[in-house]
Image (tube, rainbow, N blue to C red; front, side, top):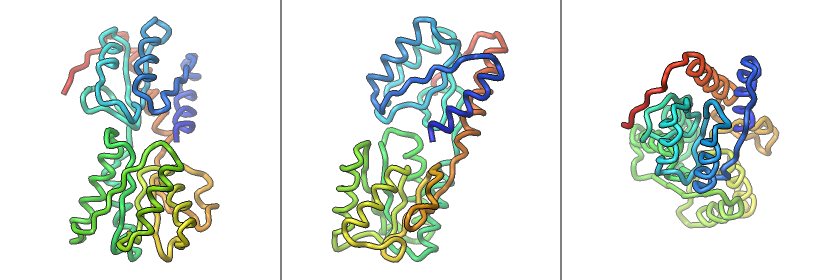
Length: 247
């Protein structure tokens, strides 16, 4: 997903004769803070950011905007800051993914969650819960907490699938959790989609090559990056002081 976003950003940057500096937080809030402090040294003209899974406090991002630098969120946003952002409709996607499982015959669909701090996870999970409510299945809720360690994710899902009251469908928040679900099903001898149906948000070009192929809700990653970059350059070209406000 992020590699495609960066391609969209770089296309717009190249058209404007700008260079793109890419920084990775590896889902660490402290690394994100350190990167922001580095950016405050004057190396950049604007910032595009998708926050880490640990980020709750956004004081460090306030420091950027207080310098007058344009700040644009993409994909993962913070509701604590009112600033331009580009993201997909994660709530509606969450409803569609859950409805797909139910309409395919799932009686006990589970939601494999990422960090509770992330807006994308919160909105997708809300879509999942509302879809169950609409279908009259509010008591069929399974919410499983995953993380950034693949082997741990496989173990968590394997344990659930071996339980006597296991789910027969899985809505994975992100593709990493979907792959972990595939491995977990294989390890406990369950078949996809006969025993467990799986759907997730994904940009995997290889989704159709998996056995069986992975059902996905595709995010237009390249377009998200391009749109976010266009907003940023429009702010730069306006030559106006960037005004922000907290919610």
